[in-house]
Length: 430
Image (cartoon, rainbow, N blue to C red; front, side, top):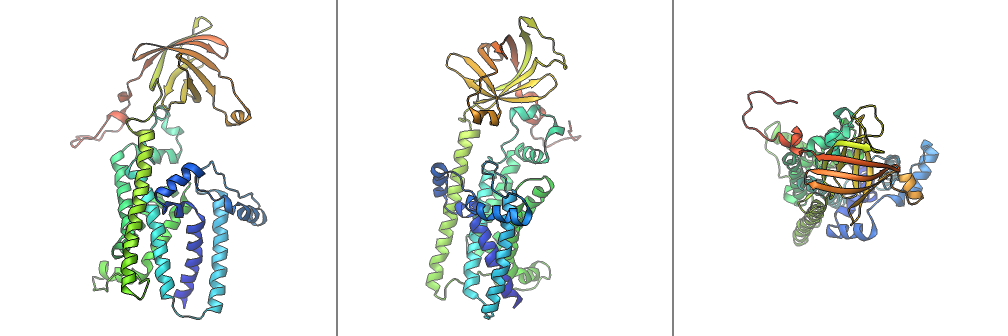
């Protein structure tokens, strides 16, 4: 009886979780998901905002509405939604048990298992390809190379640690991709669930210890892995711990007709390949657009050291107390520049390059930008006497300025140049 109550609770709880968190079913759409995001915007949970908003105000005293521009999965709206799902699942299981006295639900168990396998497999493929084609953690930007380690958040430390080694990131992704593919094949689904459990345990641990805002998703994917493995735990213990024989680890049959079961087997395999192709293609396009050899970079890409800074016709000495002089100027993304003050503060700015060689720098302030056009704080002409030398002339805060800069060799950063060594007589820490 307890097993049936648990099944009914899981159907309500994980069923609603997988359906209402729209990035799970959207992943199963493969290439269609990319088309929907391109023409109709990214998936979100805005449909549940009226519910989470009301429950948040009435129960928790907060306004639990999703912030669409956040990208974080642990928003207050998501936590309130999980509370609502939990309440609905408990009530559903109680009412179901009160009116349904059957001792088993073989067909329900079979279809619910397939549903969970597809949802978990889709997420594993999505996560996996984001690392196998290293776009989730692309490595340090030029500005981050200048940022002191102590100023980084724990989340940034994790992102940079993994992104600094693409082979390591790709290996993590390969494990997730293999787990996802195995879940779509009935014969290998148990192995896929076990591999997903190991992978999601690692993801959940890093999310908890590095404060990554995806704890809800990681923990639930971990729980789904356990739910899929629960019917086989005794047999797995017999094999791996007690070294006893066990029956085959087969998935529950969807139909009583073998022919229908054979057809649905190939449909599951086709769905897995479809999702894998969609996830892989999507990440390949992202890689080409943002990180590949043909990706767009700033016209003046690089880190530039300021060699001379003249303001109002006077050369400004490089004093750390000076509030006007710049120490460095960084160009990475095509429309972004970052200048470093003498006190090491890094200040981002919007960079607009004009065909006549003029550069306009504008303060990045979302509040001001929404209110209307913001005038640039610097209007500069760009001259490059040599590829590694840059002269900027114009106005800075309405004052005439001439800045002479020299390009920094990016391989001078140990993080980019250290590389790999088979033989090391001493550990290299710097």
